Image (cartoon, rainbow, N blue to C red; front, side):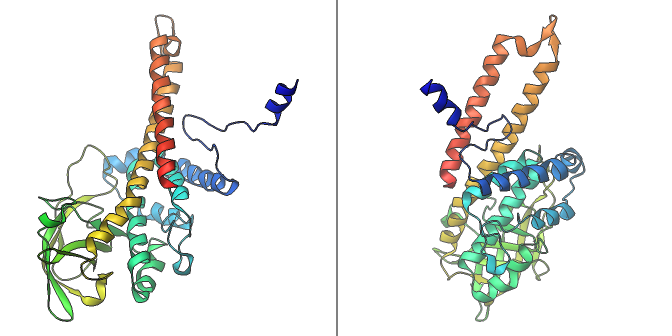
Length: 318
């Protein structure tokens, strides 16, 4: 009798293949619900068409910003939502159940906004962030080069100090949303062993873009090379201090990797949900595939892997 009474007092675990609300606060659960509803209404019905037509949906991005998703962990004084990393993870996971490609871009934009919020001057924060948090300005993160990734010493892009400005030459490769974005946070050398971060604005003389890369997916966001040819960048566009570029880049990625992992969770959850529904309706040898023990074991292992990944990502977010 006591065991039954205790069991009745225990809250039920809220879990499904698509979303897991276990151990979330009421506010976090509401945030997750808003993101899931936005995904179902605005992303999922359009994802296939966007990918096929290589369409970047700025209008839908602005709607996402209306939910607070363009500046999730940016401070409220410049229009951000002021939330934490776990809330961001929940949002990106939920959005990605509808469209991984567009959700991943939103995560990159949030990373760029956080970098400006954290390392920017008062003037930079006021100039860029209010517009970034409503998607009036779109942003891109520029680290990877044709022959280097996070290897700062191997970086070839170089900005020469000309007094009140830098002259930047070089290129970046595989940059998400290049050509569509308005701002580019560019990691470049300003000395032999010195990396700095510059904020470039679309339209600056000497800033150009390569062709949209051919990809197997994620066609909703363009991927291009970003090219600098004697690009003049004002000193006022130096983010943080000179020589802090690598630290800024890596600290951005500390959260960015949790964000992208969260997007992967959402995509995996959708795939598992789709597969589960399919084997319930598809029949072979006179019975649904769901009644075959091998496939039951297969999906059980997939569900276990998904849940273990969730725990790891949410632990990292915390």
